[in-house]
Image (cartoon, rainbow, N blue to C red; front, side, top):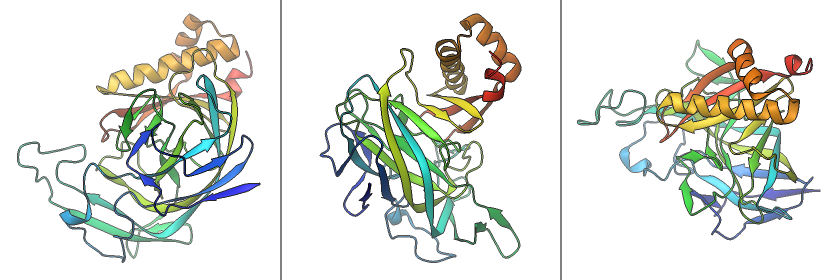
Length: 305
């Protein structure tokens, strides 16, 4: 059984447990979700277009489709979202926007001024120009559930997920989130055709509309699950979000120590030492209100324990 969730009228700019559900699915069910581009849906129309200040209203960007009810989800559960497919639109963009990015001129808000690159995304590549073709690496920027309390804007992130901007949130992988409200309140959006580490220029990925196919499962949450986790065919991954950047790294590594101790019986002290040798870690974005850091460990190594 599969459910189609339309983006029409269902785009939210905050993850919240207060909005009415737009659809309901059962654990084990597949759902197809339409996701809008990260700024006003329909504003990007042609290659070479230049955006104007009127085209973007901050902080109302990174709109996510939702909330979707997962029937039977209760606080203390873990929601696993398996990403089965991503069908990208054929046009996307990236931009320089004054005051957003790694090098904001806080006083004059000018930097390089406002610049837009609208590109064609076809045949599995981003057509950067006539010569440069970038193989697509589709990913979901915003994935999350309702936070413990209140609402969190879709430009931000936290223990509930949200605007993580992690490249590993992609087809073939699964994202695990701790449920805080009945029904979970799942949100998905802000898809990218490709994103470099750091998402350095704010609107730094090739932002694009997409149609996602995902399958959800429920299970009891591990005792030490706090932040989102990701599983790939080859790695387990933990995510931390914070400012300064070193705090985001500390969270990601701490969460990995917990996971290895709880699921692989590796004592915390040994796990910490082991990460010093095997951790694959990096910053995935430094442009959101809180930075994102990922820590990855190979399943091949863990299988020896």
